[in-house]
Image (cartoon, rainbow over all chains, first blue to last red; front, side, top):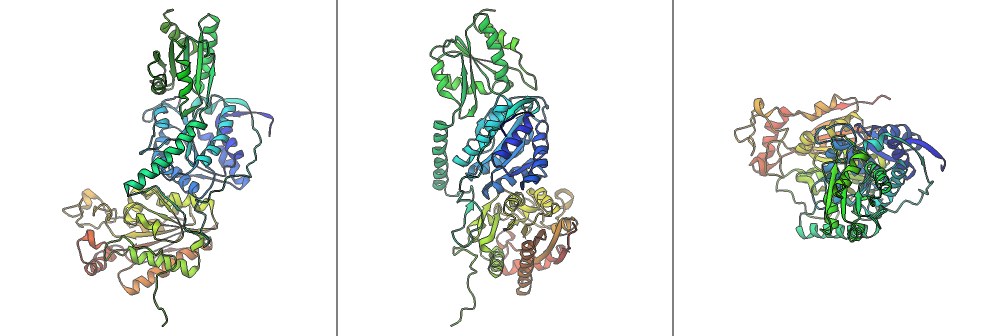
Length: 353
Length: 248
């Protein structure tokens, strides 16, 4: 299927996952991501896959834990409050070195929050969320086409590094429609998983999927081994988009939908003669530190624009490491920053206003 | 000379960590004997809980998956949905199954999930040192009910076999005990029946095993079995609670 089709973001994720060879989906309804589950419920039975509506997000992620341990390409999706519930399972999946894909179509929080788009789960996604020394690889698409491409990629990265991968979108990306193209992909060559619980057939030692190591030396060894993989991920999987940063005095930093709004503001500012660039992290973890180090040598200031009270800005500050000022502008609770608001912020920083 | 007694092949040749007199060893052995007799070890995937039997993954020769506390039925569901030709069982204690994992247990049964649960009911939290379990009896003294469990403030003990038997998705549920040779034989027969039904694709099966915890009950192994007989069996009567052909 290489023709362009008009699809809603949530449905596009589901179709991309199926095309990537995902045949197991365990979920629980929550706005604004329920179309992922609805699409899976419709499609999976027709292609020999499994869609199961669990009794809770806790159960759904633990079904993912079981299916991932059994060697399957498996996915779950939810939105912020549901992702909070999944954190226990995510920690175990990371601890047991299992691959899976988790979708978070973020809504406003904390608590029940709201159902409008937000980016206030950045900390939860990139700094752990659950307990213990682990990371998720976190992809942040900014268009539905990119959601499709990254979903496919997410399964490969998960399998390659035996790690859970999160795709973080927001309510806007989940709900809006855009034309997309699906690159037909060979799914026949899924990687071998000799560690999986497939039954010994009496031909090998039993496989054990586990995250318990009571001996601290063993647990540290396990964590260090995972850290080695994280280092490889940092070396190989960092993704970002940088536009107009070479000559920029002011560099906007934004991910997901906010980056598209920031790009709009950037175009206006450029027309007015203010040299503005944009860095759009596509992997939130690992964070694209190098481009910040490089850009900080020539830029006057950075402005992180987020649909939160300032979460990614902390990583921007760490990456810029004091080389120049890092400012923040955000709207939260389901409110979306406008290009004009961003333009005003840049002008304030530049002393133009 | 003919060997008349030996370790079941499905049981790993490692020392078990259980306390002296604990009945986990007996139940492990029964599960392993059943796997041997049905010749299914190579096609079985077990799910271990959190609790005293957390290390069950080291004790069975089949593939094993260690779940988080209470989630074993959800993990087993994930495994079974991927490998529906394999035999999938969970091994869970009362805290795991009847407190923190109640939702997972009830809904696995409600779905008629084709798995087998071995439920160890010893009326206490063993691993953490003897706190009240959902199945602790009224009046039972534990670390967190030092004046005896008062149902008015600490709730009533849950009868899981009876409760789950009301669900349309439950295929076979039996409560057994491992306090005597006769009951141990019956327990083995129940476990074998549950596994066999699963192999025939019949649906959700559970065997609740009344067990003892001499260490945390503060009794000798023999006294503990007597206490089980005198106190647990009257509240948790043995027998088949559900054995029905499912419709549809």
